[in-house]
Image (cartoon, rainbow, N blue to C red; front, top):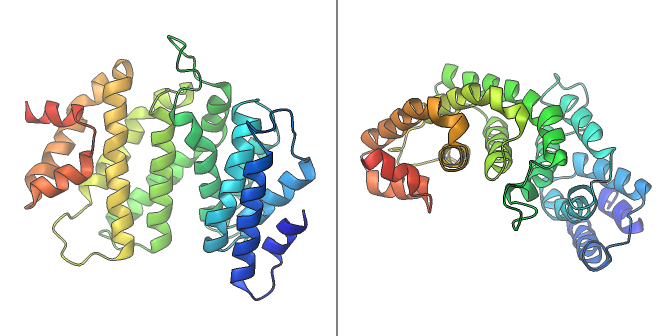
Length: 291
């Protein structure tokens, strides 16, 4: 607990705060999870950790989110405990600095979404791969229903903002777009949460519009635009997951998905590089487009 306070109240020295966060990360990895399956982290500690994560500077957040991930996997993912986590995170996101007109400037939106990303990430894989047809974990269903599905309204608003401003948005917008795209991808890479099924047409429409706003021939790319390209790549990975894993739900969306990918290929003057960058190791959709 003292180390956590040092992370949050570490004075003027960023190095001290990062060192404290790193110490806490290593301590947690040694003492939480598979090494001590019966150990439960105190509720007070977890509450302080969440509050600290919502206010931490980026350099500290990058380290401290690993502490959260270790505890979340051990308790929420594997044991289906920590019932306060999803309601707390839902409230934090809804009342954060950029979502609710700055109602709580101490709760940083990007920090809160980074925590959400860390929470969803373990569910991109099957928890019991030996099971023939593993059902969607109830924890993932809860996260998607209570947090991710409502965030799709924010995704739509940000995509509309990108289109109206001809791609010239702030760095924060691009960071949020990328994190939301990652969260969607982690949610559908292996499973299909029921709350997302009726929203798939809206998701695909927004992602197609986002991809349509990209320029692949820009010579000098700013940091924000690199983030936008990463969001575009993640959008295509979402499409690949829908096509390869969830054909039952994506068949009606296939024409729009393929047309979107074809436009990207035709538009780019450097097709080979862009195509390789976007599709990476996911060959299925590329084969369909080629055919």
